[in-house]
Length: 127
Image (cartoon, rainbow, N blue to C red; front, side, top):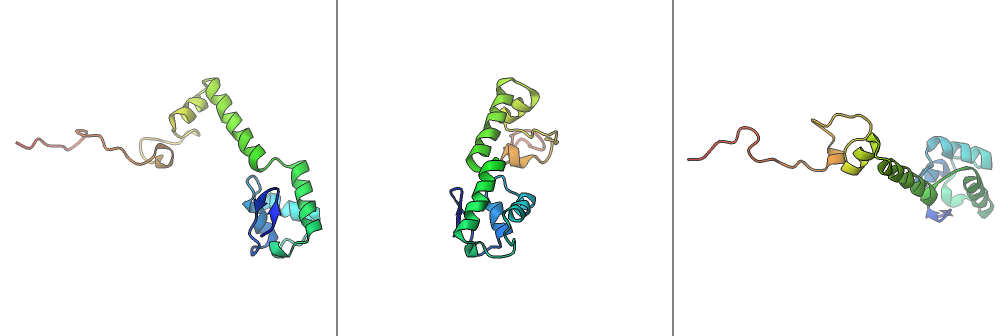
């Protein structure tokens, strides 16, 4: 299992797929990285030599924001939105959808499991 910038990438996967295991590296950036580093994207990650891994790490470090630094940047952006009390910040704070989705139905990913409210509809008295 090769390590790139402190992250173990799966060795059995092709290099272009293994690079996507880094936070902030998608398929397009992975293809660009392989091209810039002069690496065949279809060879397995475990077959990469040390100098090829070093070239990949150098390009990633120099030109891209990834892993911990990117996570920190995203968290700071969300904290800034919360601090200035903008609409998006309030939605983040309340745990509701941020990008205009409906909340009357759906939105279960952000809102969590359904909380049943007693006496809302169709509840009859038992006498």
